[in-house]
Figure 1 (cartoon, helix red, strand yellow):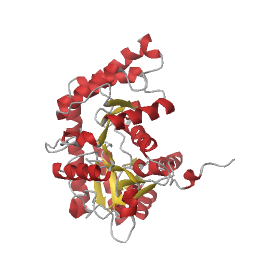
Figure 2 (figure 1 turned 60 degrees about the vertical axis):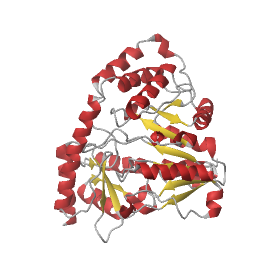
Figure 3 (figure 1 turned 30 degrees about the horizontal axis):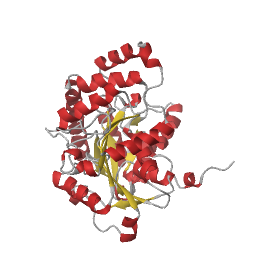
Amino acid sequence: MKTARNLDNMPPYLFAQIDKKRAALEAQGVDVISLGIGDPDMPTPPHIVDAMVAAVRNPANHQYPDYAGSKAYRTAAAGWMQRRFGVEACPEREVLALIGSKEGIAHIHTAFVNPGDYVLAPSIGYPVYSGGATLMHAHTHFLPMRADDGWLARLDDVPSDVLARARILFLGYPNNPTGAVATPAYFDEAIAYCRKHGLLLVHDNAYSEIGFDGYRAPSILERPGAKEVCIEMFSLSKSYNMTGWRIGFAVGNETAVQALGTIKNNLDSGQFTAVQDAAIVALESSQQCVSDMCALYQRRRDLVLEALKAIGVDCVIPKATIYVWARVPEGLTSAEFAEKVLTEAHVIVTPGSGYGPDGEGFMRISLTTPDDRLLEAVRRIKETLG
């Protein structure tokens, strides 16, 4: 039996590797503190859980769901876009239910990328941007990112032969893992770039609701002309502590939304309608639970920043996301540092190199761990560093 050649080019998925190492240590009775994966430690808000229980009991939800998502869910998503961003979207043609935004990001490659094509992706970003291209026998051109540019992926200097075969530009702000945010001017530049070169702009906005110090992330679809070239991916995972529920939505350019819908029609059967019903309640109810979660993460962010500063670890204060992006100590690569603190301190951090070539020299720390465990993890790291 021989697998497809594209699997030979796929690196091991970063978070699966982390889970494997953690499980091996815990099997030996080791107390491991994971700061690696952005999986909220708080439960889904009770009103959403209650809605799910009621929806599961509804026999109408026990049949195959609509491929594109229920009309009620797509209408709720469109209503949320209007209330949150002032963006109008047609529920029938410009909104599509997703089994989590990761699924949408992966499947959009199938809709637009041919073997031998290129996608343009940030040199620090969600691994699925490039992984999806590899599975299509396509290539990724990484756009440079630097701290002194605010971690905004640079759109200039893409080789002409690459640009001629490019089909998609991926961006994601607030950025995972750096926590960087984009300016309106940057979004305008990206939109103009995609219009000029005939690219689809896929904006990953999974962290739109997690902001600090009064910051509220925009939608790229607020910008003039965006809907001509953009599709935006949203997730309820982080905003409402619903990672395991696997629910999100895509919104934007009609051609892109419908093409993605065609792929989903043929490759999956849609998300369980009961989950969609519960998601409607999340989107349409009071957003106080989101505000409370942001306050919790902001407090944890400040705790971590203070503790890291005390041990001499350099990092920038993030305005958004559930992560702190920090430099690793000199003399160690990102992977070497992550391995060192795992084996010696029994703390998991994510090596920045796992997010792309410009992530080398950094690590990502997730804030989805209780305060006392966060501080204990930093204490252990300090002891390891001597």
